[in-house]
Length: 185
Length: 137
Picture 1 (cartoon, rainbow over the protein chains, first blue to last red):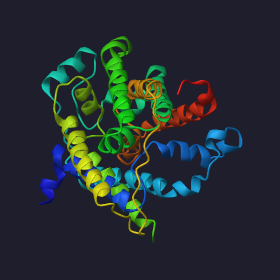
Picture 2 (picture 1 turned 90 degrees about the vertical axis):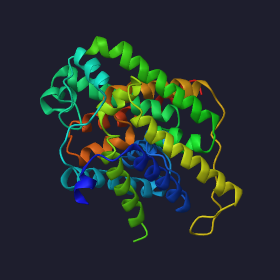
Picture 3 (picture 1 turned 180 degrees about the horizontal axis):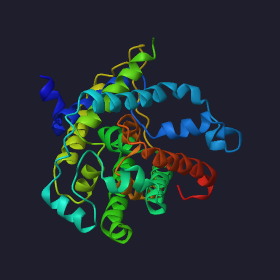
């Protein structure tokens, strides 16, 4: 049994569990959306004193911060107890495309070229993570949600704005993948 | 103790995102290159089941555990906001291979450098708060 759990899980288990979490949060009187935590953290750090956007009752969002803490714990449990340490089994064509960019085939969950300490402490590596993160934070607030809020919750509610946002996610993602990454790597 | 259910929900989320490799930069690259069904399977299954659940909740006017009606707030109508904001989000998603949830799951996975991306995401959120009123919405 434990052997089975330690293998990577098929996509449908993940889809089922994510939908269940969304429904569970609705029955808890909340809605599934992760990126609003970033706004909450800014507000909890006192950003509301200077900028009106962060001047709200962030304590009402404590439940979502607890969800965030849980997500970190979940990652820890997976890495420590539920992993067989095998490399991510991505398709051969992706491996080949990435090799052309100088990114070696998977050894674990993440590429050494971006996620190792030695890579992140070069100027280029540092900027990739910092600017990538900046775009995620800025873009998700501008669009009013991220993958959980728009792609899952919003589209499940058949909201046109969420569909437009997801189309945007792909426009940006394809620009990075096919235009920026060959320049960066 | 009322709070513990949110931590547990978060733990389940963190485990399933890890075990289905949705936190992996490689999987996000594979998705944006349309070279495997994996990520589409995850999001697709969640959306199909989520749509069904949302429909049933509305149809039977279900209530939450405290007896309050479950309400879905329609998002405000706009195109530029979602298209521009979404595209900027996508630029970063493909680069770091992590959207906000998986970013934090990666901390638990001991990929400490993701803290740089989280720092960037907080800065980006803060910057949005400053320039919000000057952007087309």
